[in-house]
Image (tube, rainbow, N blue to C red; front, top):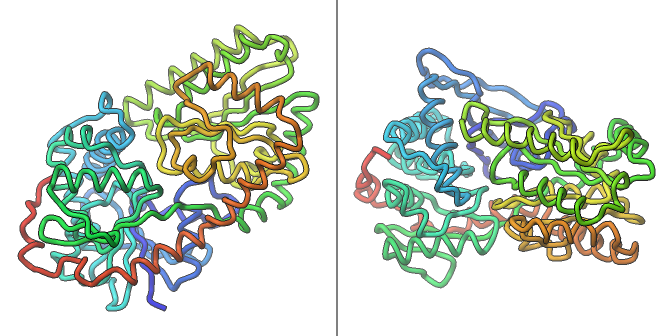
Length: 476
C-alpha cells in the first residue's frame, strides 16, 4: 500500500481523539491517516521572523505530522487575506464581503509555493498526495514545477460558486487552470461538481470526456463526488465514554420537563446563525403556549476574530440573543443559552443525545458533519429530529431530515413546531433512514473511495507536458 501524504492549511490532528471538536476536517483526516503509513503536512499556527522551510515532525495519536511555521506577513496575506477575505466569502456566495487585494493574491501564491518547496523533498516515488481545501489550490502546480510526478489529488470541502460569481474574482481563470495540475479533483456533492464543470466548459471552453474527466488548458483532470462522513465507531465510543455519559446526564437534568434544541457551529456568517435565532424568535411569537417548555443551546466557538466580518457578526449575535432573552425569558426560564466556547467531542455527543431537536441551518455549506454527528448521537428508541438547511451539502443525502429554507423565518418556525410535535414512530422511522446514511458514508468509505479513484486516475491527467506546466503566470 502506498504512503498517503495529506496537505492542509492547518495540522489539527488531536492528541486525544475524544477531545476533537465538532465535525470538521480534523477528525476525518485523523481517522483516514491511521489506516495508512501516512504524513500530514500543514501550517503549525505559529509565526517566525524569517521563513526557514524546515518542518517540525511530531506524532499525534498515531498520526505523523510535519509542521511549518510562517511569517506574519504570510499569515496576514495568505490566511487572513486571500483565504478568508477573498475565497471563503466568494465560495459561499457572499460577494458583498469579498475583498480583492493584489497583496492577498501575492501572499497566497507565495505560501503555496513555500508549502510545495517544503513538501517536495519529503515525497517518495510511490507516495499519493492528497491536498485539502481552498487554502492550497495552486500547490500542485508548484509541485509539478519542482519535478514531482506523483499522483496528486485535491478535495474541496466548501461549495464551489456559480460561474457568474466566480468571474468576479481577479485572475479566476488562473486559479482554475492551476487545478488542472491535479490528477483528481473531488467535491462533496453533484451540485458543486456541476458548477465546477459549468465554469470549465462555459468560461474556459473546456470539454467533458464522458468518463468523469475534463479537458482544458491543454491538460486533463479526473473529477468525482465523494461525500465525506464521520468516524462513526469513534464517535459512538466518545458518546458512550464516561465524560459523554456524564455530559448527557447533566444536560438531561438541565432540560427536565422541557425540550432542548441544539445548534453547534463555528462563528461564521455562512452558518445562518442570525437567521436561526430570528426563526426561533418567530416560533416563540407564533406559539406562546410553548414558552417555558423549550430552549435553544447554541454552541458557537469564536473563529477568525482578526477578520472584520467575523467581529461584526459576533456583535450582532450577542445583541440578538440578548434581545430574545430579554423579551421572552421568565424568572425560571431562558429561551437561549448562547455559548462562545469550544467543547470536546465526547461532551458534544452527550449534548446532542439530550437534544430533542438538532438545528443545522447554514446558508451555504460544503457538507456539514454536525448533522451526521447529531443523528449518530441519538437514542434509537426515542430519537430527536434533525432540522437541516436545504443549502447544506448534507441535504443531498439526508432527505429524511426536515429540510428548510434558512432564509425564511416562518418556514423555520413551522419546522420547529413540527419537530416538537412529531410522533415517536415517525421520529424512529426518520432516524433509522438517516442513521443508515451516516453509516453508509462513514469516513472510511469516503477515504477509500477517494484514494482508489486517485490511484485509478489516468496518468495523462497530471499534465506531463513541461510546457504546459510553465505556461501559467506565477502571480495570483
